[in-house]
Image (tube, rainbow, N blue to C red; front, side):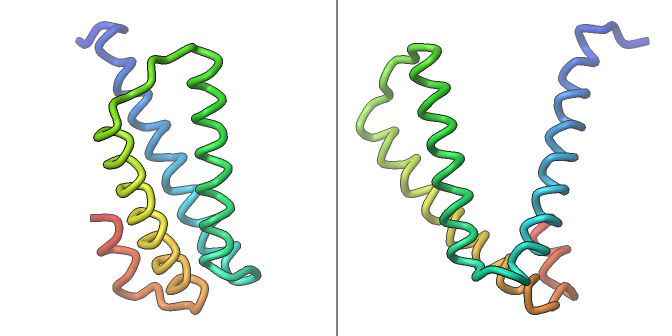
Length: 103
């Protein structure tokens, strides 16, 4: 039998999966009413603001310039990819998009 300390990561993993699945559904649903790129820009900007606030509150050290550049590039590509995905969901094209994205 696993101990409590071994089960904590499992709990966090399940909570992250629940949040991710809920956000995918909510994002696809929201983009039926709003433009996908505008919606994704708003959600990424609010997420970046939250992370900056948390970093300031915890007084985290500033990462290297290279790390920041890679993070900005990854965030931008993830945002564009998510906007394209939400655009497809907003048009009702859930056939192949959803399972491929889940993988």
